[in-house]
Length: 428
Ligand SMILES: *Cc1c(COP(=O)(O)O)cnc(C)c1O
Image (cartoon, rainbow, N blue to C red; front, side):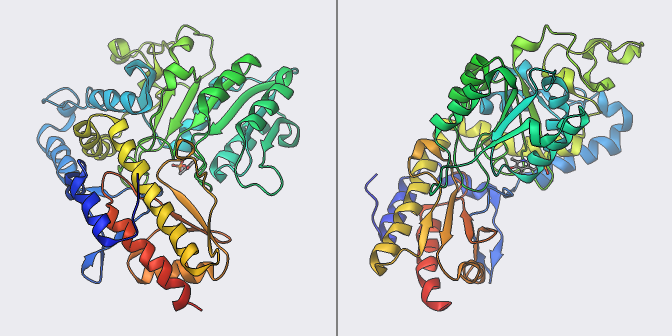
């Protein structure tokens, strides 16, 4: 796209935008009585206007049907997750029986590790990206210790080369090959939360398998953001949260993917609970765990219907859009526009105050740009906040800004760049 640094251009792009009507489906926080510019969907997506009604409907079912709500009504609670399973299968590129909507993200990561991390004396290593989200680091360390191993021996983190900020795919693949015989698992995020780098997941999955290891992905920053094809890529397992790009509310319900090639392995370790029992016989309450065939066999506890209701409000919007590729097209244009305008600020001033560490190649990133400020970083961030631009801050000097195609506009991006430019002088 040929970008222009003008408000007229931004207005024109918004008029041409086939997704512009979706902004009106969200509640946008206010700043001094006006809509704030919300570029923080990477951390917490906005509330769909419909969400309160989805909850109210289930409160009414609880009030009117009480326990019969599990079995009665057009959306009985026993069946309530089914449309969600369909929607999320589309978003992550899986068949319906490969996904389940349950728990929260780190809990799911632990449950999946119980099944997919089975170290023995020969294969016990886990390769992960250096600087992974802390919860994932803690989860991996504690899993390794749980098996009586030392994280220092068992966990290999890959860091960027000297002088570089993101990982080269070739370095990831070489590391996997190098540790091949000792490797149990390659565990990567889809998009790194700090740099915004979107990893080459199919290449990573293939290298892991060639080495005889499993490939697992944490898609917290990728699900609902970039197109995913978990089944086709052969990922063994994955999990994600829904409160970032999927707008399901703080602490919203998570989900898992288990590739169908693992469904026949009944010997797989798992931490079982009755909700993972085959649904047709769950209420016979017989001894001996007989798991549902599919990802739902990893469920443990009763579905939290209120959380599912929130997720349903959001998924209805994704379903109306129809295809993640449609969102992706606008996302690439919006994020590219923010990158272009940030570059214009540097050009105009002849100094590089803003240095984007997110990959410049649009295929290697999602919505988010991580911008390092070479001076006054925290003050610039505060200036944005005081002027109604909501991004987020990561120590020591990174501002993360994520234009989200469902509710952000080209004008949001244009005004953000103006505030960024003004901030440099204002905070001197
Ligand atoms: C956001 C995020 C989490 C958060 O996990 P919760 O269990 O939902 O608190 C974990 N991992 C990654 C990679 C994340 O981006």
